Length: 195
Image (cartoon, rainbow, N blue to C red):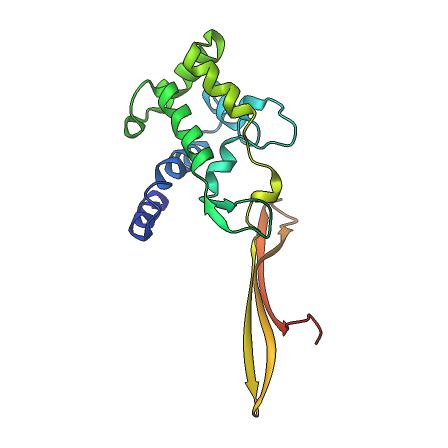
């Protein structure tokens, strides 16, 4: 099962990230188990990109941000750092909505409390929301889906600066079902990009 596989990520040092990921995956699984969206599901899906379907300029602060354990520290060329801020916000939001510790997750209680707190406010929750709306991520901090690794190819005693490029390169759509599938590819090129 997918949740068991996510649990195995703890063994490589991602135990700080997997609780948030598990909560999101549970909502995907729930969607496949039920034919119609409940009010609780609608609330969750409205927060995919922007928190509770709100605006916020260039900031992304929906739960999709919790799918990235690492982000660039300041743009595409910067070093990767842990995405602690957004993971913490989403975990804190889960805690507010649940009224308890993260491991006591109950979806129905979560959404009931979440909607109630959105309606009533509350100092801590309001402060949490204000900070959340103004401190999302911008698109340039998300890691690109293509890796680029330089290497030296020694061919008959001569060295060539090369690079291997691999990763998600696009998407295709099944004409019959409408399903969208990620496409992966790889290539080896000269370091300067010429062939």
